Amino acid sequence: MANDKWLDWIVNRRFGGDKKIAEGAMVQLNQIRNKVLESASIHEGDTVLDIGTGDGFLGFAALEKVSAQGKVIFLDVSSDCVAACKEIYSSIPNPNPAEFIVALAENLSSIEDSSIDVIIFRSVLIYINEKLACFKEFHRVLRSGGRISFFEPINIFVNRHKPKNTVYGYDITPIKALWEKISTAYLQKNDSSDPMMNFDEDDLFRLMGEAGFMDIDMMIKAYSKRDPGIKSWEMFYQSAPNPNAISLEEVVNKSLSETEKEAFISFMKPKIEGKNTVRLFSEAFLTAIKE
Ligand SMILES: C[S@@+](CC[C@H](N)C(=O)[O-])C[C@H]1O[C@@H](n2cnc3c(N)ncnc32)[C@H](O)[C@@H]1O
Picture 1: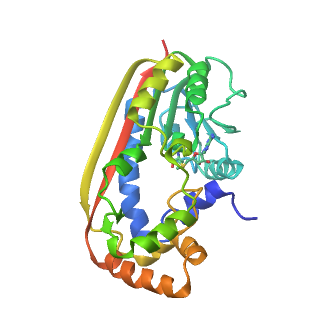
Picture 2 (picture 1 turned 90 degrees about the horizontal axis):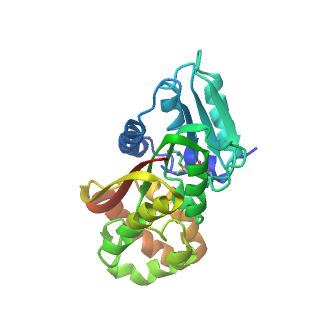
């Protein structure tokens, strides 16, 4: 049976099947994971909750730190992701203890009050509208003195600051009309209803305070970066930017005529394959404590 959209995206669609791109992206993701874990100060004996665990990217690294007295809970809304984590876990010789839970981050009712030492996650709130409900649940399940450490990209920053008429850093003015057709077919919601776009770092900081967290520490890294670009047309055309999105190829097939498609590809492909670009990033790392 096919995987659900979350696992399918993590395993197959996020890098468009391009190994080199995947390796490059993993370097950056590993840095983010290390920073989240370092700030979480996981000790032996801790019970760690990895929210929106995916394929256990953070959880398995935490598992090495908790010792036989601690445990990691791999939690995700996707039962396929949780099943994938279980399978990986079963292949580890003498693993430290673990638990596997299918649940929504905004409703952790299967987890007792004050039962968790550390919560970690990466790129999960961008998929959830009820961010305050999540933080309240995180606060409820943490023990007094428990810690939370996470990373979220601030996508709205990129939208605010990217030069007009650019896509992935490339000027698309000559094919603006075609790109508008493509964007409409992407069914982009307006920013206020899109959980990926409807928050910035100020909101994260404020919502954590509202949920009762103390000693909130936020680090924002926002930067523009000259980038060799994607270089692989297949990667650009066939990958999906997130689990809820379809690939550009699927959108183009849906929204452009054959002639328009040809015009789009003959303009865009040489740019993607040849030119360097400039990309924008904004990353938020937060930690806090439950009093
Ligand atoms: C971008 S992936 C991140 C996976 C993993 N944390 C990592 O760092 O690779 C987002 C994950 O959040 C999960 N997710 C999305 N909405 C969720 C929700 N409401 N509650 C719990 N997990 C959710 C998805 O199933 C997916 O595994």
